[in-house]
Length: 631
Image (tube, rainbow, N blue to C red; front, side, top):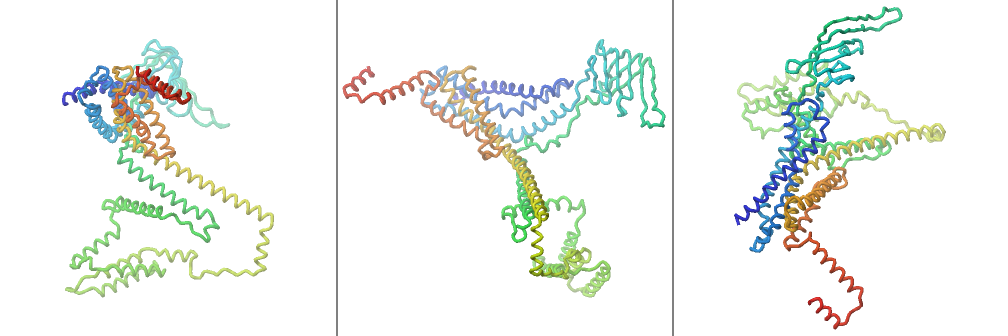
């Protein structure tokens, strides 16, 4: 059995490597043609092209592996069936499933490898690919001055050459100098010139011969002002040096692409999904809060409260934000908060006294704080000094003598709460002073005549017009708010679905290798033809089906037409029945791709139709037909 396993596995590995290279090259060519105009013609170093090609090869490998497995398994079992090796294996008592076992184990390991590559290698490579492609796009094209055309590749200069003798010698040169940013105020003409680069092609020297330099002064000329200056300078030789730094490719930091889903692994995608879920919950809570304010008459007598799930998630999100804020700002580097210093001092006093922290009670402090805040009384700024001093004297008089117990926790908490009240404003007193005091006037009681007079004002045409205008404006505002909020929520939902599809793609692309093996191996045993003829044709057909089903399912998932899990796995779920059907037919040695198989099926259908149409025959005629069929 080991020799048989080596034979089958060896006959599979060769076509697999060959088909993988061919498929990868085809997909690489497609990607390179997509960016052809942006990549070539910019005088890039050879190693930059090789780096980009290497990134493309790795990034397209998840798509190339399933097709390579399908084609190579078809070719392997097709060759075995064509040379009757598969027949010999079955005649020796070895089943088809046992013959597929070594390749199946290899494909399982290949599936695991594809998953690890999709989750860890491909995201990092995609990050480098996006960064490199962006840098190539931003790079200026190579210095290529053509005859009779203005060249604007050099920043702040526009150069026109009517005739080029070669790459160095020029004739009839016209240059517009825009370095001052004031327009065409400086123009240079020359009969001839030479263009030469130096210092490792980082600078270019343009030597002009027999020309003129025209320069116009700047300034706003009024009615009585003198005209601006205009100078013309004739030269026999003029040397101009241009910096070619704009033609160098500058690399962009990779952290600028950190928001793309293609560069994240499963862990990072799950973090983003959690953030999006909390953002959705925030907007749901926000809509509930604003809806009550939008309907004035509704909010007067009834309250619109969000569901408990939304409130609980909102509280959880707020608590996490508070913890994050404390971790970022309340640390020794940014300065420790006052409450933390007080707590530290309290722990120091408690440890010095030898008391157990679990036996102490902080209820007096909490009661004192609550009582003072609820009463609405506070300590005015003019009284702060005296009050704090009096409190300090009181506490100092109560200090224990040497040998007595130190300050208890209750007294320490009381002192801390009083100090906080002495240094912080009382919002209750401020609100009362702003119009929420105790002396609130009672509403006046209207008589029946006064009510009738007020109601009569509503029947006037002017009031009705104003009432309709106000109602229509409020309705439009409510509609615009709801439309805006719905658009915002739909956008967050779609991004959530897109990231979830990217999460499931890590599994589906690797699982497709095993699904393609389930189709290719039994299909090759049925076809019994190797080479690059029928196997290639069948592989292309099933790969196109897989690709179309994948795009369709992912579109359904992204647009919310189906569940994200079902939409992403739709292509694999649709192709698995084909694999099971082919496997069953291969075990029965069915001849699905031979004309005799379908001819026999058609003959059976014709006989069945003839029997239904013809009258019931006698027993003698039936026996006669049976004898004729046997003979």
